[in-house]
Image (cartoon, rainbow, N blue to C red; front, side):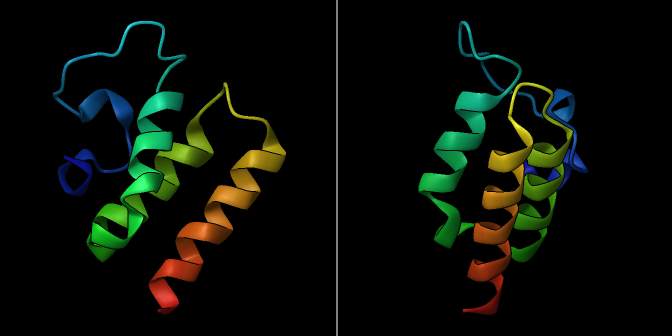
Length: 73
């Protein structure tokens, strides 16, 4: 899903989670399985994180760093 999303949550064809605050729960679930994601999926997840209006800037920075750190491993 993330590989084909081009970094836009609206491009992900999946069942919407009620009260998801525009993808916050999706991001949390994706981060739980970050080691299983391909490099392209991680890149697009980072875009989704940075575009999310409901995440505070401090969380965006922290999540982006965590995604980048998994790319180095």
